[in-house]
Length: 585
Image (cartoon, rainbow, N blue to C red; front, side, top):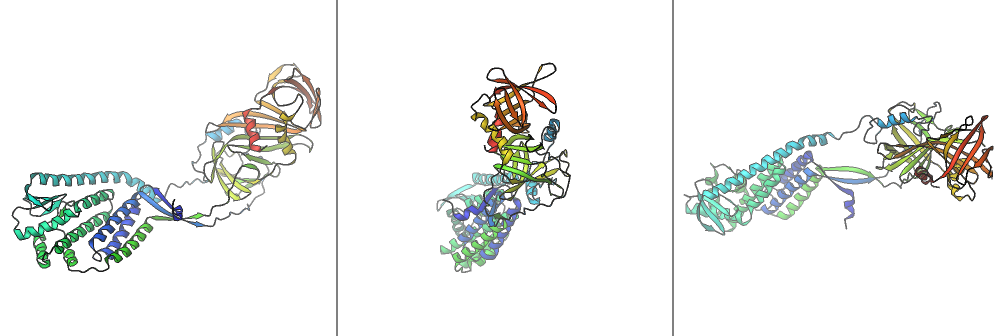
């Protein structure tokens, strides 16, 4: 079970060379100020190893502590300007938004993120710098590993042609023509002409290297250095580790009873004119000979207390140097977009120019996977029909602030618990408002009155007990002059409720993601089924003529002109089922 504090820690994989440089510098500074020459060799080695591993981790992992802050509540007031009323194009009907213009809008490239701005952020300077450096980093790492392999091959070559001279404390002793004694793995190499007293010091020192596994420690540190080949602090840490290993071997020689003064004189005489040449081996010589002699003569007290303090300070400093501190708002109450909304206004992305919707109401019904947007494009007298248009398509939230509506990414901003702003890309300027991005403000709404009764007719059509039960499709329009039946296209459906009817014309399309997209227009109003030969819509009489149980013809007059339509019983199409689901009926 994770600790509670871990819920505020994030590890992000990536490539962060700047963080590695900062971490290495901080850790090495702590080593020089608080560890070197101030504690025993073994804890100092542990600190160096921890610093190298922390530096390597910061190269590939970003550690982020997230602190919480109260969530800010955006203002609910929107400044508006008085402009002419018109139908916002985000809820288009057939007259206001022709199909060819709609397809043009879908075909225009849009920004991939939900930010209503022409300036898209492309990442911080250091993130871009790190990405450009990555190919060179890989090449440099490969070259360093080849260099390390060459060193190991040189050591194996030396051992192959060296002369065996016996065993010493489990290690194999070799005589070579090289003037500098050294060791690696379980092999000790000394010059063939070394005198007995000098050889005793050398064998005791190199045996300590082998017994404590110093060669393998150096090899592991070289591998970490290969991962940090560009970082100068990696080489400084490697040099510090070699110094600590030599100090540890020196201490072992003295603990075995060697004379301190004679051993130090021997080191000076042996090392003064020789240079290092294979860094991976445990070398008898080292450039920091003065520090080694000082350390041999020094009494270290409270070593573990000092290393604890130094390690704590170093780790805190190193972690801080490669850590992002971010503020995380308190979890806000859940904000569910499902349900019915009405548009308050539409404007540009900053609401500098807005248009209210007092004359032309707009409604949005958000379901689980679909959204239904309706604009009431025209209204007659209170008892007359209500005309509407709109569209139905897919809907999902791709993030907390971006909705994908009908295949288009739309930034979403919560205003309060009962309202939100929705932005959309308008490259063709169909809304007649300046700017490429338009923003709508929606407030939660409960359908009432006539609108609710019209939608209810869609559900009540299945509850009827007479011949008008179910859904009907217009199969043809009858020319009253010739009597010819003209097939209806696009399809038009009709539903008779208890006291209201609902007629809708549906045109199928697809959005940019290939999902079904439906545009529709229609009307609704009051309805009365007088008898099997007579019905009344919005106070107007319609004559019925039945052709079997599943087909009828209706004749009516509109503005002094007589019309006839043929209707056939049908199954409710999938698009209208989705509409019913969105409205929550």
